[in-house]
Image 1 (cartoon, rainbow, N blue to C red):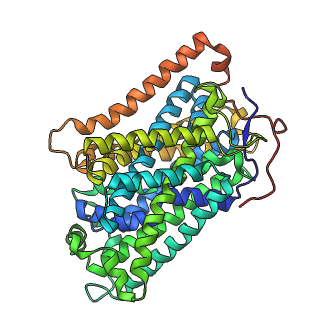
Image 2: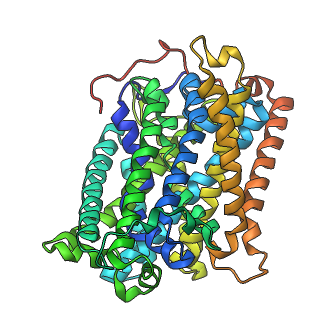
Image 3: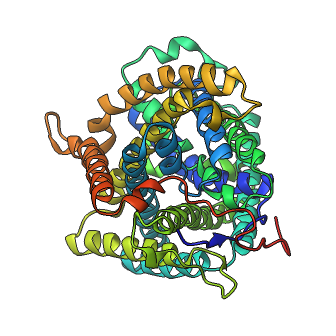
Length: 482
């Protein structure tokens, strides 16, 4: 195992929270996720749905963050399952995580390209290529620079969402402030499964702090920042969805959301005048880029950490600094290369960047990450006393993971049963089954590869999930932090 590390002691709890929240991208959820959910599901109780899904994801994250804190592994799911369930499970989880994170990250290039092409003209793939270059460049720089960029865009995004909420609630579409969005009877409709699936996708990326544990000033902040991210964003999304329903009218919001000429959510922002609409349009573009950067950073750390242990080619486990303490340059270049190939394939095929590229890849990623959260909770419940540590509590190691598995399994079932409608596939089409098939096949490849390592390279197999360097094997980088 190479004694090479990431930039230690450079991320505070706030910095970790920024990465999780920026990956989720509140502006993208407001302008894309909430509008699309109303338009396709006709679920009026979307605010309540966000609250329920946020609660489920928060409970699922308890076991995940407890394991991530104890193990300190940048490839969080890989390390968690390797230690909790076995090395073969760890390699399978690592590959599934790479597929899921890469899928979500690359899907955003389709969204970005289509958004820019609609506003400024040109081919979507040209704009996607420009974004690829920008994200790739920032991904190889010190993490502090990326964190400042993410924090600035996230702050303005939340400010715009707050302005949208005030604009919507200040002038109700029905004349009075309606609480129908939180009425439980609104959940008993046919589109609830699709609404839950969309809400789950809105929270994907909130687990990002687990991959920055080696760079955190305090490992305990990984759990706090992740749970805080789910709770804060759950509240933001629920209130934003409620404000949209109130602004248009609860019974009319689905029709307005499906009508491109209605201009949601920007038409609501116009009510407060000023430059809110052009600012929101600009920040939406920046939010897509920063979300790409957050996912890019996570993928780079997975590649780095798995390469450091020899599970992936060892040549990828290098950083961009002569002191060997910097950004994971090899992992960053790998992610940029993968994204370039995928974007090129979609561009050459002539596929629609939104209806096909963004929708299919983001759904694949969300499904994969939900499966990994479930597996991490199982791993936490089965972890040994040595892994849990002397201060282990029953809530984070037993009760919360068990509740998370129960709730998460229901959510995964609902998501899987609504894949066809999410992807816009024709009834009876077999294409939606490709997504779970890809995840299962990836996990099987990981298991086979682990078996191969066990036979041909037993020293590598023995080190799976145990690749965090010793504390004094590499220097800390404590000059600057955020």
